[in-house]
Image (cartoon, rainbow, N blue to C red):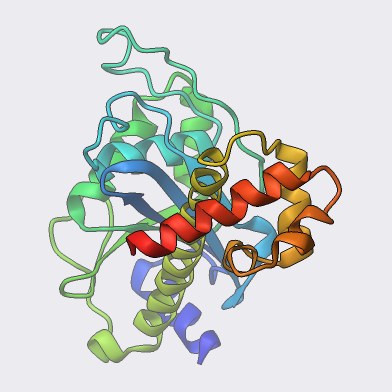
Amino acid sequence: TIIDGLAELSATLKMEKTPRSIERYDISHIQGYGTIASSSMLLDGFPVPRYYRWIRIESANVRTGHSDDFASLAEAIIRRFGLNERQGREEKGENCSYSSIPSSPLPDVVLIDGGRGQLAAVMAAIRNSTDPGRCEEILKRVTFLSLAKQREEVYVPDNPRPLHFEGGIFSAAMLLLRKCRDEAHAFAVYHHRSLRSSEYLRSVFDAIPGIERKTRKKLIEKFGSIEALGTAEEGDIAAVEGVDELQASAIIEHFQKRNLSE
């Protein structure tokens, strides 16, 4: 059960009290571009969507067509906790401040996607922050873990060996951590599907001259989807406010050409 999982996690980690909130971080991208960190939270074992976050990674070193989970996770964490990473960035001539993200209560546990390397990168970023007082507060109040996918191993900072739970990967604690991981992953997948959908929508309309943003919105509101627009009658398209007969004809012609090429 959830209660058993939280109790086992507390006992294994030798925490002063049973944790209630677990915040999970997952990195995703589209072929190395559009890297985001997704954050989800479980409170008493149940999802709390109001604390879910998408953090678009801003570091120039990450947005070059190559994924870098270490740097991405480090950036996400220091922005989440209101820190600035100091070491190395000034030497590279980078801006040492990231844009802020909405604040939320400190979690009892932060669960990082990955193994020892990802967790070490996150801890190094926190310890190298420009605010020692805030760093000390976070390390005192928040327990950091990482969950490696390949062997379902859980790591804590500064320990090369994975945690051992009674019952192994089928223990109540592991089931709870996997639930948290899967929630964050599903949230990240949903975000990237939304991105791809919006980018596809823009690419279709950009190929049709003279269709302004307001008109695009009205067309989608009228027909419901780009696929439905592609099968609509010219007269129905021209009836939409802001669309004249020439534009309606251009839309029909665009979809006819696209269908022939597929």
